[in-house]
Length: 216
Image (cartoon, rainbow, N blue to C red; front, side, top):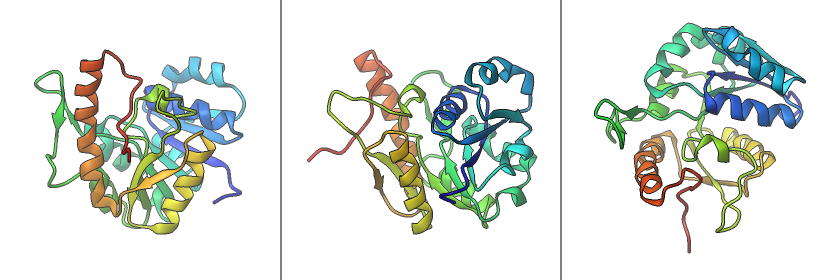
């Protein structure tokens, strides 16, 4: 995994484009998967290098690391479109959040805290190694973030220790101080629950450039 620098990213929104841009800058061969490849023409032209665009299935098959960067409510359907077998044996970085915006802002959670999208992804992909990652910060801060409080660690969780170590290598490469591992994939219930709080804090502070961290 360390020597094969191919990454497939499922999604075409801000998170997918921001992470794709960062990975290309670090020498990765990146393929974004989308239903509408044409909508990423400008991004592909801007990023250049090893950036490419294809279907969800093509992105999932692209390399040993797959990033889920889809809207929370669409994530499971996108996995079905890509084909669950495409993820077997791979590190899957799950950036998604099951936000419920049906009542407007601030959002709630689609599943409460008795389940999580991270757990649903892992159940849907039993042969993949899912690590919840990047979901607790806004897309502009996902790579080489700076905070007034100093270097920060990225919150992660997952069932596979080796996969979490690989995820930490990736987040360090993208400028994080390391990873804060909160345990198995059921920790995604709480990492996802942080996001409605992150939104409320952002509304109170008038910024989306913040991150929730542990201080001691």
